[in-house]
Image (cartoon, rainbow, N blue to C red; front, side):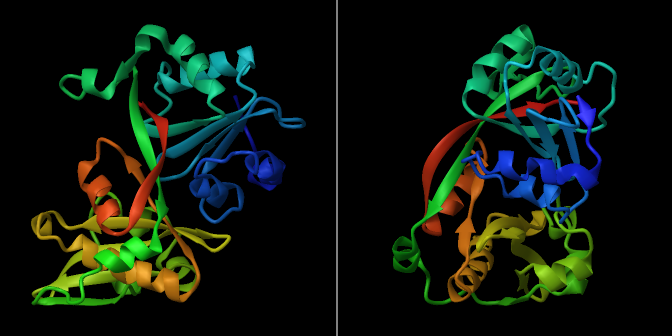
Length: 276
């Protein structure tokens, strides 16, 4: 694995077009929207690629039979040299990679259901990621006509960008509040005048807007996220963006919310957590 200089990210533009699973996060890296990392097998004529978004999502694609790269990737993934201080969530394309990875990691891979005690070091955890397709008719058929009392929804501004707390907030997907304000979109919900939830564009590329959502812990379970997301989906429809949603199947809250908002599951993809 060779770390590629960002001035050479253009070399991934055409190869990435062959990836048919959702890859907006990977594109945001190679198009220098955010400061991620790219590893390749060869700087001059790369054939195998590994793109890491700063939030921790990653994409492995290209030639899956590159033994030298694969062995280096194995060391990196199992964090043998303690080079990483956090885990990464990886997708691989094409599907041929899945058999290669199963052989590469052998006894070092566990299904999420087998990870008793939620261990976090020295192995690969196998999950499932669900990609959804938006059904606009279903969205409008299910949409609530009124929002709950004591709720106010406003466009996310720079102050909210900096104040919103949680593990999935705009701060982790945009280089700055200015960058988000100028190139992104989001809506935030206040419950009894307290900032409670935000839905925002994690990425906007080619008229596709991938939705990120976070609700402050004390306000969870009140059904507020659907109102915040609905405001962003309305924005997508008005501006002719395709809303994009994906989540782990194990994330039952996100999975159920997507379906309430008119999204329908369209693909199941192995999702690998590279534990630190």
